[in-house]
Amino acid sequence: MDKRTSIKETIKSIVIVVLTLSTILLLYVFWKDLSFNQLSFSEIDLDFGFGDEEEMPAERLVEDIALPSAIIIGTGEGDYFVKTDTKELYGSPEDPSSLVSVICGFGKGEELFIEEISEEQYKEAYKYKSVRAVFNYLVPILDYYKFKGEKAFSGVEDVSNLSEIGFSEVAKDSVLAYDAQQNRYFRIVTGETGSDWMDTFFAAHDFSEEASYYPLEAFLGEGNGTDVMVPMYMESDMTVREASLGRDPAADLIRAKAFFGKTFDFVRKIEEAGGKVIYMYGYGETTLILAEDGSIEYKAGESGRQTLNYFEALDTAIKFIDRHEPVPTGGAVLPGIRLEKSSIDDSGYKTYRFEFSQMVGGEEIFFKDGPSVVVEVSGGVVSYFYAKRPFVAEPSADAKQAKEPVFAAINTIAANYESIAQMLGEELTMEEVAQRLTSVKYGYLCEEGALSPVWEIKAAGLNESLYFDLYTAKSYGLD
Image 1 (spheres, rainbow, N blue to C red):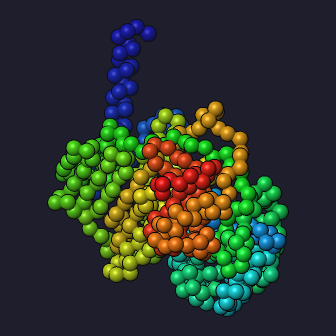
Image 2: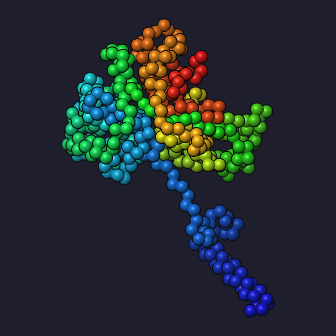
Image 3: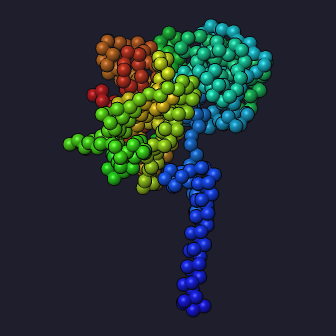
């Protein structure tokens, strides 16, 4: 084929492509009953990609985020295993044998009987072989059934908000539940054998390598301390990890357009001397603040006019987070998120506030300056969003360490109880300090570009958490 013939064939191919596209366009206009001045190519979803395209990551589901804060496994011999990395044990709703499926299914049984029991009866049942899911936030159980389009059995409404739910071998036909908002305890007789599920659960999981936990009063004597669980002896391979919290100015424009969408052409940009950048729509009705520390704060101009239930609002919040997540670079990872706390303002079209914790390598990340991810949903739309999301570097091979003993939790309390008492503004003995404690857990403290392994201790009467080095018990900020 000579050069002239080749050119003719190329022109013919181009003409065929143009005619084909014109035909598609005219058919679209005809069936949509549009005039050409109404036509926008953004309305036409034509895919002319070649080959396999990379699939978009799936959005997270409510069940991926609304996880228990802890799962407490009782051996029946006075000790417990406490798992704070709960996703695997909680399982998936698609698996009928998973803990989440059993929990969500209890209110749909046809043979259901609910009776209120005493706090003593409830706690006594969990001294036996047991499995219990503990939530730091309230779980409106009826809202969940409505969200899933399922009908709950009459009587479930007595348990308005779940805080704990689980099974004990001493109550084989029952589910045990605690509603912290009402401070009420329930035994829910389902007609099914809960111990059968527990037998399967224990057969499927080996906890022999896990640290044994005991209530604080087991170390200090009955009446001293609380039922807060702490490990007697524990080993860990957690080490300091690099974490980048700084903002990438080159990504500011992309981030801002993601929040404002089509209205971005009418947005004003203000750059402050300290490095903070503010994007503002209108007269401050909607603002986006990109701080130098990498945090993002978004305030919407108006609330919506739609009344959502709890899980519909949570789903809205999760989808908003998914659409505005930063993309890690350089081999770093973005921590996962988990619902940590929630509250509801019932006025108007309802406002839901959701606070999320972050997890990396199965361990929680703590921030001294409050929750690191917050979403408020008002009238069905996101009205407020705050996020401080670190990019966490994977530890290098030489930075990894073998497991070694940590400074025991009870010894950490003993070494620092005077400082804790000083923070409380009272002269207290160690036992009296222990009675004030509401939470003792370990994880990473995020500050100064690093994640440091720590014990986090919370006490009644203190607004902020206290942090102590996991291996030395040295305090962060009390000296």
